[in-house]
Length: 246
Ligand SMILES: [Zn+2]
Image 1 (tube, rainbow, N blue to C red):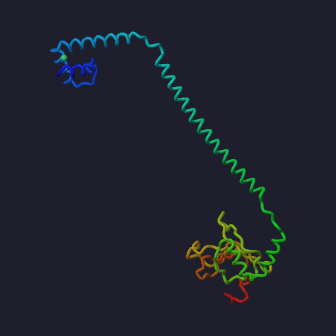
Image 2 (image 1 turned 90 degrees about the vertical axis):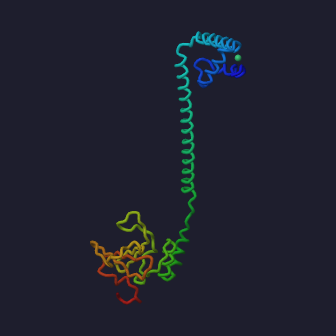
Image 3 (image 1 turned 45 degrees about the vertical axis):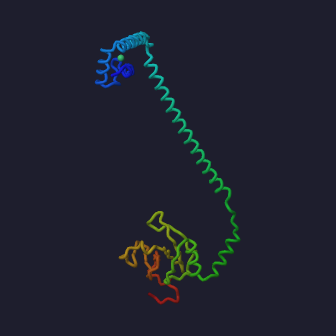
């Protein structure tokens, strides 16, 4: 090892230093043993280190400094969390206020901007409607409700009490289907339009249930089946005059 390398390594070869490999330390030591110049430099550097170390160790660390530092860190961390939390709370509050404003706006519009109704117009529309053929009228009303289906030929549509309307299917809360109400000489029948797919294959055509009976009208593969609920002995009165008895 030459002097240049030895002096360079001296900086790293302090006691308990780990930068050098054991082999390099041994080689440096061999050089120092034989080179008086480097040896004296190494000695003076180590003396300086020792003096500095001693001086540093004599400086007294104030009592409780560690605790103070830790407490300060802890409080800074607490502040950070508090700020984040406050930020989140402010954001949520702002979102809640916006939602509330939207809802209030929608409510106000719903309550105040209701289009007025002209009762004369309602009466005229009904008067015009009754001039049409009952079947045509019923088909059109079902279409307006969103139901596109051929009408069953086994019903006299001139006996309809009112236009078709959506109604809850008895026994099925919340399940709305089109309903037709027929009446003649004190007898009434409610007819529900049920999707063909919703009726199991082996369902009997007529079922008695207490004082009311349920009867499925014959189908020609239409998308909806007509389910008649009535309390009479038969449905002869519902049949259109042109249709022969079943
Ligand atoms: Zn040397």
